View 1 (cartoon, helix red, strand yellow):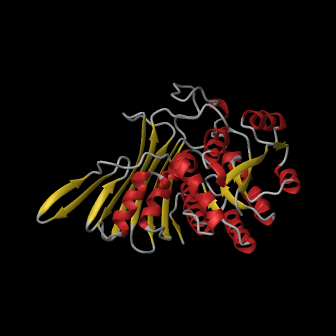
View 2 (cartoon, rainbow, N blue to C red; view 1 turned 120 degrees about the horizontal axis):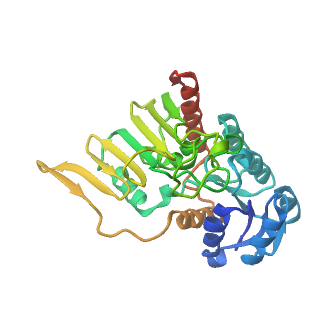
Length: 346
């Protein structure tokens, strides 16, 4: 395979803002040959704008009529599982946007479909591809932090409810900030911790601001039809004894407009990841370590580059179906715990 033939499923903002432009950066390694969207006119518009040869009103038609090596899935969360499984069964490698699915059962079905097809399935957790995360991972793998036993995850906006798309529609998305922005920081922490299996999950959700009219820093939202939480808090105990505390919100009365942070604590060192700053004790001295140089490459660009390279050379992508199932278990457990008022034990 000399050049990867790419199909895009979904012609919305994540496709046009992240996937399409970054595939185009791959030069001779990849070519977008088709795009599909249930809104045929939208598919046509995007195809014409980005010089994509073919467009379709359904991904099934695209898969039937076009020879593809891989697809990017850029549709609402409700449709991830069906689209991914169909593409895998059609013989395509799959890069699916996060979260993996709506339920653990769907994530497991996607994992099984990838194993049966012998194709790669990877998820769009683009923060783990950022240079500061890669640098922290090198320090962790080198033993600089020792045993990481605790983490804190924050993805909090002051008034950052999306005023576009279906982000506030629970039926199509499955949830609010937890599965939109919180899951990015959660995945980053889990990735750096070695993706431990959860043992106990306790969660609480709040809908206090999103369902009433107010100031929006990301545009006006449809507060009268707001069906997701605007804040989730939780704690996770892992089978290896480590713990993680999570806070994520579309809207909260806090100082900063936007906070995206992962903090790790180990017995030999710790770190804040965004931006990267590490904390250690060496030679009877407490020290802070900050890099003076990191490559300037975006997470989406690196994610697409590594997906293309994996498809061409057969190397396992950085994000695996197994990890997708684990994070889906945690997300589902957080919502279940919030609904029942009880911790979920695995």
